[in-house]
Image (cartoon, rainbow, N blue to C red; front, side):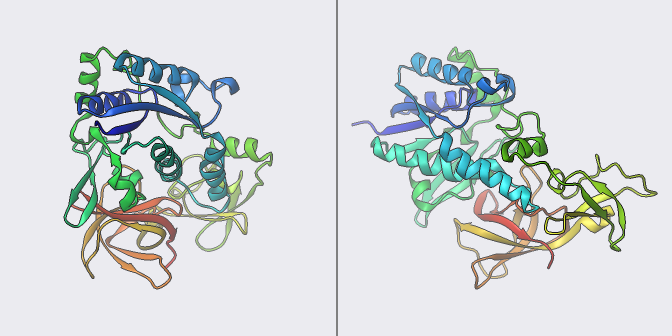
Length: 357
């Protein structure tokens, strides 16, 4: 009897080819789209977001072509609680979150995983560019072969059980190869644009989104330099992020950069580019996929698609992880993820909690 696979489909080329590859591998496939929020009915354009009504029809069309069943699961309440509300809360705390990580953690590999089990599926499948491999030590998460598309950074939260029941069929392909497969199979979305930015804020205006969602206007406050002197007024602290230079509206002999955000005092600290470099951070909510030897030097990434840098990691008694970079890193930002790598293997990752060590 063929194994069953639940394919998470967004209507894009990646998930469409993932479904095709799993069917070719002999799996009994079911295509599903997670309805996460309303978009076209509140004026969002299809080209700037995902999970739109048109995207649902695109995914359904691919499933019809492949001859597999297709369903839409309503996860809007869960998405609001786990992703949107968390996103707003993080910004209000002076952090810069990565909602894609939370969506993967709570929606794709928790709620959708539970649905897959209820449907007696053996694996859950997504169009991520990453790999899962098994050896005598267990299951491992690896980078995809296409370094320019690798998405292992946003998947670090996967547990051993989830990895054992997850498949990333695109991990051994480049993006160009995936589009070619889509062309050969006659998929009309072979050259569909990838979704960009945060899916529920397609215009990138985080402050306007937070104000609209909470019904509260942001309060202006002070820009303060490294000496504690007021040098200007900000429009609302959660409209800024660490390392930001543009949009400050301050004239000064040397460029100012955002170096710290202080929500309790409603102030934003400014400094020079040199003030942005630090060697240490504390991460919490850490998920270990592989064991790490004491004083082992690994590579660490503190931002999606940023170059990895050599670092060491130490587990603290309270469950947090102290990470020390061998060279200072620019703009380490609270709320972002730090992910550790050993060659192509993901060792683990967590959320940056503090950098003022």
